[in-house]
Every structure is written in C-alpha cells, then in structure tokens.
Length: 322
Image (tube, rainbow, N blue to C red; front, side, top):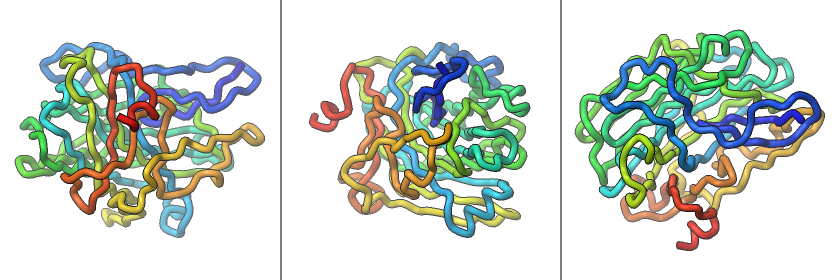
C-alpha cells in the first residue's frame, strides 16, 4: 500500500492510502543531523515528543498567483511569548512551505519545499536543512539540521518577533531574525538548502504557513515544566526585487474558538486544494494541542494561538477542557 503523506512542519501526516509501493509514514521526529553546522554546547539527542502546529494556506489572488508561477523569495513572521516555567528544551518556531502540486509542477510533481526554523529559549536556533539528493526530486530521509546560536537568551513574559526569509527559486534559506527588547539579531542562512521532506499531492500550487512547538525533553529540561508557547500578529508574504508584499496579516481576533482539522480528500490521486479555506488556521495534525485563546498578555487585542507540546498522553478535547 502506498501512503500519501503531507509533511507539514517536522513530522509525517498520513492523509490517505493508495495502491502501490509503501512509502515512509507514521510519526517521525527530527533525525540525528548529519551536519550540525554551528552546534550549541549540548550533545544532540533525538527529539521524541509531541509536536503541535497550525497551518494556513494561500494560493489565489493576483500577487500570490504571479509569484507561484515564478517563485522567488518569501517570508513569514510571528510574535512569540512564553512564561517563566517554559521547559528549557521546548523548541518553537515558524515555517513556510511551497507546494508544487500535481498539475503543472515547477520541478517535481507533489514536491513540498519546507523552510522551517525553530528556537529554544536559551538562544539555540534549529534550521531544517535538506539533503543534497532532494534537489533531484528525492524526498529527504533525514533532516540536515543546522544548529546556530543567538548572542543572548530570550526572556520570559516578553514578546519577540521571529522572521524567516527563504528563496524558493534557489531553494535556499536567506535569513532568520529575532527582534525584541534585548535583541535585534539576524542570522545569515544563505547556502542552507530548504528541505523536500515528502510527497504532498495537492492538485495545485500553494504556499503554506505554520506556527509550531515541540517538546524536546530528551535534549534537556524536565517533563514537569510547561511546554506552552503563544503566538500573535502573524504576517506572511512574498519578496520581489527586495520589495516585500504582504499577503496576509492576522491579529487572530476573528479566529474561530477552535481550529478545524484539515479537510483532506483524495480525488484522482490528488488532494483538491479547493477544499481548503485560505488565510485561516487549521489544526495540522490530530495529536496537535493548539487553540486560539484569550490571554491578558496578548500583544494586540485579546486572542493568541497557544501551541502546547505537552508530553502527557492527553487528547485535544481533554486539554481544551482543562
């Protein structure tokens, strides 16, 4: 049996089953990086806990349609906040992915080019680089993690802006920026290849955007601490000739009180993109603990996205009821 897989953020989400040869599937967390780059002083260990993420799609409108015909640079930024009891090992971040689709793909049918960057409160930055053979149309078997370090740790109870820029023509990262009261630092990520994690057979091209958190208890920290991170004021867009065009800005005030699950169906071996509403947030996987929630510390308005990488065996409904 062949499993159709959408790789959003870090792990595989099995969407449907087709006849043919079996592909890799199931829940897979970051693999041991074959080239850690500028690593922190901690030894790498496999992260094996819950990942929670939300995803937003965009594909229609003159600006994005023109860009999808000839992709160049794109960006995503989000403000992030955590409280004092956040587990030191919790990794949180942003991601954007170019889906090539099955109809008239740019390079390879069903390719999913992922530009994911995460950070820990201690300033360690995780860049999900791709394997070299991905450029030949072969999905990566492992993440080629590049670990970098900021000049300072992040403070709790403080809003920080994360921003990633990637070049989907060159299929490379460009930069990652963290801004806040005690930092305004940009890491040069040029030369790091974006990843092609797995086959994602949407019928048309699209650009997707994510906020996420994963608890990496196995790389330090304790399970009795919080793993909740909060996001607000998310903005994403495209860049042409150095000029940014904002495609969507979301202060989350009109977000429904609960995220819908992905409306995945399979028609003629493809997933119809028309089933997905644009510029709204979906729960990216069944086990994700994500929700819009009112908080007094919201950066604008009252609503933020909470993404909790809770390691307890708890379902979303139970978690929301707590």
